[in-house]
Image 1 (cartoon, helix red, strand yellow):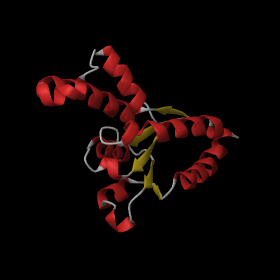
Image 2 (tube, helix red, strand yellow):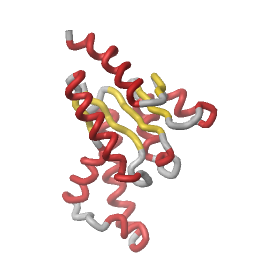
Image 3 (cartoon, one colour):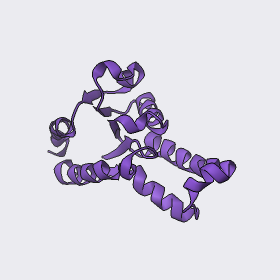
Length: 157
């Protein structure tokens, strides 16, 4: 099985690489699942498209920036829809200024794929839309890991 690791990148420290790296190792070791990590995919696209300075384009060349980001958006949508089995999402401060995480959660929901949300906000501050799209909601990654180990270890037997 393959998980999509959704969460803030543009407005996250380290582009959200740290928690994704931890989950990648844990999923492989504990339940034998692989992941789609958009941080690594983004790095590959930057190299492929010669877009090393794409962040500068946001200020200096909006069309060039939009064209490159559109490539990233299209790739992510395709992967959520067609190449992953479930979505793990970190819902924290970084997602509030962005839009990709909102879309990924909604697309996974629309496709009938489980969405496992790690929510870092008080429940009353969590969007009802995101709540409704989530299959399970956790407050910590440790809770999610216990759930995933129980949920998917049966599939390996």
